[in-house]
Amino acid sequence: MTTLTKIMTAIKTDPENLAYTAQGWEPLVHILPNATILIISQAPGRIAQQTATYFNDASGDRLRTWMGVTREQFYHSDRIAVMPLDFYYPGKGKSGDLPPRKGFADKWHQPLLALMPNVQLTLLVGQYAIKAYLGKNRRQTLTATVQNYADYLPDYFPIVHPSPLNYGWQKRNPWFQEQVVPELQDQVRQALD
Image (cartoon, rainbow, N blue to C red; front, top):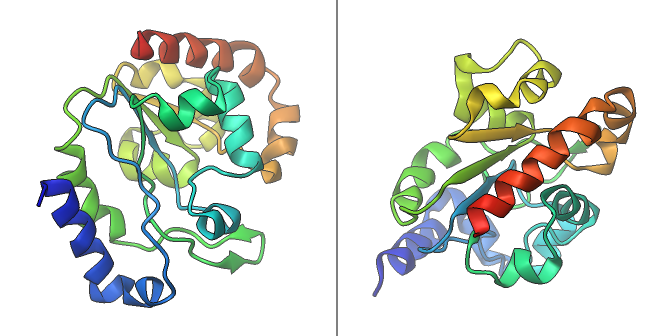
């Protein structure tokens, strides 16, 4: 049994995840030993969990556009890994999905990161991922952190979540599409070469 298989079995049998396992939900995470790009996001959305395919929704379409990759490259290149802060859909909140469960990433990320030694670019997608990985090094606001993305390279590339709920933010901040997205696409190209 491989280390990845052991970790995935441990995740599914963890008492904190048994309710999800009982529903037949698989943890939505994509760990690849050859990955050069790692996407850390908050948690799978409802559609992603129902279809058992991470980023299989409008957010995923927008993320792939921002990255400059096709759906085929995203899912089948063996170079793009996905590791959310929680591997299960957390449920619906007042405005969007609930946040990822506290402590989940602390428990499972480090052993999984150790299986991906070739990661060159880590995308931090949304405020939860940015807070978890940048901590006190992030700027006072999400907007300022994303606007100053270059301060976190080469280790991390923070971006706003591609959710349709953030379309208003994108309209108010045209610099994101004009400046950040082209740089993100360049970084992705380099990491995939």
